[in-house]
Image (cartoon, rainbow, N blue to C red; front, side):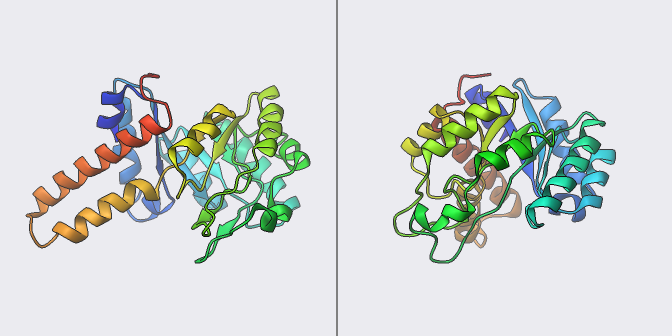
Length: 251
């Protein structure tokens, strides 16, 4: 990914899940931070969907994260807000930026076919104001995007809602984040960028290519060859996403 960013002259955020802390005692995080520090373009390291308070505090205290997603969306609204505010303050005191989402929409096996099905779960102007008041630097709203798979109609985004959220966030210097981009075509991603989204999470679209490579070639190549070719696949897919997101040439 770092090679892709340097080749495309694109900023990059390397995102890791909490597993990267618990499975390797932070070794993967330190490796990512080292690679980021030596890159010729701006690269930061972000902890995504951190839902455990103690783990967030451990990460802020002991690991080289530039930002942490304080994901308390599994709590009821009032507790989500209070815990988010407390952890945002904790991270900011250590020079770490923060991200939060007012609520989480899961896409099931059959996905969600229509934005109308989601109306009660979409982010409201009131929620935007409440979460901005917690002090977060990045806000990941629900505008019809889902974590998981979409239905047969594909993503159905509410751009009027996105514009309202962007306008409110912009007044407080808060950036808007887009989660759940599986199944997004190039035009839709670029429409989101034009509407004010600053950070686009891409996960499955990169990892699927890597996994497919492993499945097809694990029995044919040596381990070194397998990993080197896999890294080339990740670089190719990352470069493609940088072009799609229009971040190429911005660093």
